[in-house]
Length: 309
Ligand code: NAP
Image (tube, rainbow, N blue to C red; front, top):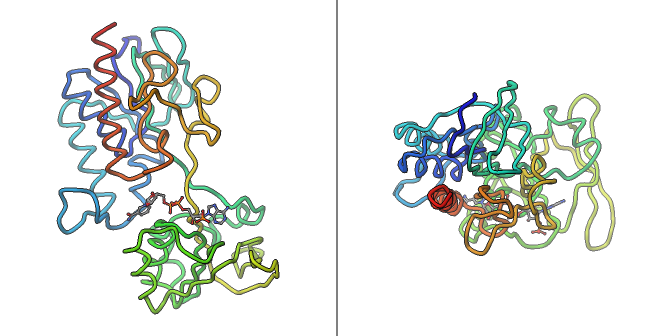
């Protein structure tokens, strides 16, 4: 593409799509790179979202993203289901290269790449990924019907995964390194009331056992250091996320945890014409609604920037 676009959005969670809705309604003719396998972002791997305002009875995560996508398209956003693999954010005109080798140039860029699943960091966790180790209950839970499954983590994601897995599993053991959940009270109460969920407090996973597939876990008690082994058919890892900032790490100012730093309450990064929103920036709230809100801010910031340049 030889033309220079006003706005290119990279990433397509609630932040990216909301930025696209606002930018297209502002006649900025945006392109959004949705990602080749990650289109729609983290909500594509969730089930019911109960707290997105406007949906009295809740809405399925993938349906919500599909609606946002269609809304962005309705106002003229150009949707490209590919990744951006290279960015040069220096100078007035930014250059991006996608996974098919196409180049796109733009006056402003909105970064909305979101976050990726955090890994425990065990060698056998990686080796057995797809063979009993998973980060997505809605994708893989079905394979472990009537078996015992472990979920590691103590936040809303872990509780949500555990609840979902009780549909299939004979038992779900939620392994957490402390003695209380970080999850919201409503979610924690629901998990506590579910007879299929057992809590294993003060334990961390130190190895995943099994040759061709997961057969169990090696655990360490975080209070007394004692080690134990227990049989499981699968391990679902739900210990949070890390920002997807690796592509821009050498160009943009990041904080010590890898989140993009923005100026005050704006979405302005340290590079003129480059804005960031959603989970890429937010290490505190990380909700669909806050991500959508910051996507709106990014589009408004980009619009203002373009008007002044
Ligand atoms: P989170 O709130 O950051 O929780 C991560 C959990 O994993 C924590 O309990 C943490 O333990 C544990 N953990 C982190 N690193 C670990 C490691 N290396 N080994 C073992 N445990 C580890 O992440 P999240 O649950 O993914 O939630 C992220 C955000 O999304 C939150 O704001 C949450 O409210 C939101 N969310 C909302 C919903 C919903 O409303 N339906 C659903 C999912 C997520 P510590 O507690 O000891 O730190």
